[in-house]
Length: 276
Image (cartoon, rainbow, N blue to C red; front, side, top):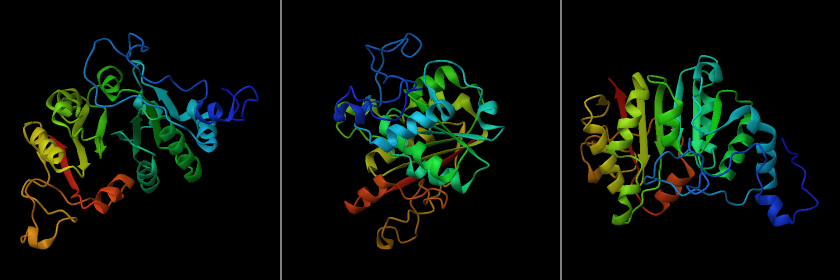
């Protein structure tokens, strides 16, 4: 791997945004390999690298070879990667603070954290280094390819999707991650009893999530009658019940996106399902 020390040949702006050589290229369709993109399709994300800090670049340089994997179509051996721990796939971990907190709180559980944001990978690696966590592996690229080509059937103990891009404009709804086609891809990878946990502060997307998950006979809503939402005022739901939605579990920390949404007056909805 390359050194984390700044290169004297590069200007400061380039040094801060450059990722280590071992880090995979972003998944732009026109640059992707055949294994990464075997067909043209609508994607739920926009590939981006963004500007990294020196600390994030250093963490990538030190930790990517050990903790990171490119989403390139190569099948993963999850038992070997996680030492036999049950593995939950988290799609879209942002800057990694929530992922790191959950990993530190339960070292017996493995987390396969997938995202396309380079600074987020570096940031999460900093947290893992700080906490000494050994139960997280990072995946860079398109989670659809990860699920389709790289994970065996019944290999996941859970799926987490927290605050995905809501794509609020009607013409962009087709880009939302939680749709029937995505669920068809996910379900075979979930072991019996696996938990599917999603959260959003965009109410129309929450309704779509709930409808898509409720429609599957292979999933059971653990809060079908509704146990309420901690973010709703009692007078709005006198019985303390929001049908279909779950309260935020204690093991899900409040995320940065969640705090921002709450500050804007948004209502946060969690949905929690179990694979039959």
